[in-house]
Image: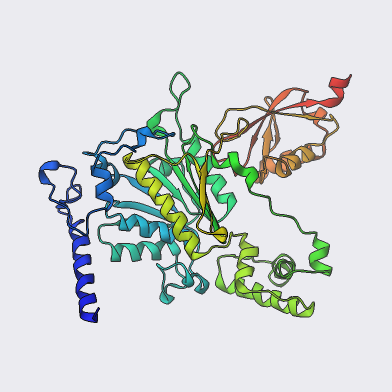
Length: 477
């Protein structure tokens, strides 16, 4: 094939794609292949056959209502409009997020997308996060990704937000029809899961109101393995239900880090846990700052050389400090494709939805399997369960809070109140100071056995954990 022939084909393909998305007004389009009106539909060209319009506009024996997790009934006449008018939130613009945005754009049907990410672009991102270029290093990932997609794909309207997901309130999240998560850490995924689950409203019979349910499609990768899952808040299992599958970070004794480091991670921990506060006592380490991370890497490298420990790299430094999950480009591509595929299904009902968990294990070959991740009956997010603990009456309040952090709930900074008073509240500062004295008191001084306590924590936005504590020694008596 000659260069001129290749160029001609590329121009023709691009022209055909653009004709699918030429807009004449805010809500109308001259798109004839993608039109939901039979009277305006033209026969599909050879290139257009088999694209998304084929799935959306034709009846199928495998439509959504025939699956094991039916969400809605497929209407070939209105399916494209459902997707076109939907508003999609993409959380994360990193390795997985770039792939998700690309897949949404190449659907030629999706228009309205908001992308959120806190990070800025580092030079190490360029090997797999293909929406970025060298000139983008140091700039916002969300803003750079949105600019690239909008310029390359004019039918798309991608609005960026550079900041934390926790900065937005419930009203912001209510505007979306589906949320696709490409986050790279467990803590953020827990928060997002809690927020979207908390948006569900209930009727007088206690059943979820369908219009208030915003599906979450959660994707995650780790090396050559990945997973995607469909979460229907208050109906299927949520991310919190599967928290046991994510092992908590193993704590390393400080004496090991300071005196007898054995692995590269110990050298990195020494640099940012001990050396940084000594060198910069008035400034907190910014894990998203390339200059700060370069400083940590250099100090860790020096410590590794001192103790004869190899393997300290800049990428490992980022992973240890930010506690991120490493990614491989091919895994990102596969998992993102599954996520966007599921988004199309829940928006248009054109095919059977995933029920509910799909795993991909690339290190063992091109292999994947699906299974139903059952809802956890004691989940503090998607069930209204009152949890019970039996403790000695001499247990201190501080010990109880520590148990909530280290145990199955894995809380971060819990506050706790009883029916009659506030036992401990972390914010505001004045209230924390007023209740600090309760931390060293025994529970029998603060409450009665069997009393219900309410626990709040940053990992559960706008919701709480109901806890009943009974005293073991009183039961024995």
